[in-house]
Image (cartoon, rainbow, N blue to C red):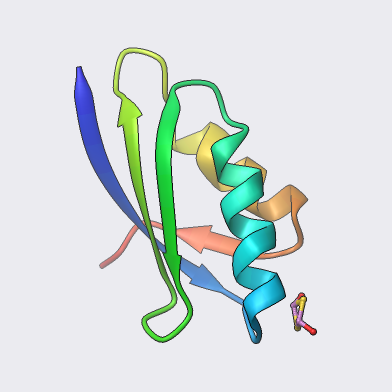
Length: 72
Ligand code: 9UX
């Protein structure tokens, strides 16, 4: 089923950072759409909740050199 997940991203300071996070998240299995906003430091992810895990998303962002967390 399609689901929309929001993550807080730490460590982004320019548009290339945004692209890096978007590419990293887009590669995760089950992700269909990613939009990262530098002003709000948030990623919005459209994904299949049967395939996705929060851990895989957070790990992908970590591997790209940033830090992701679920919003408070
Ligand atoms: Mo921009 Mo981000 O010059 O890790 S790519 S700061």
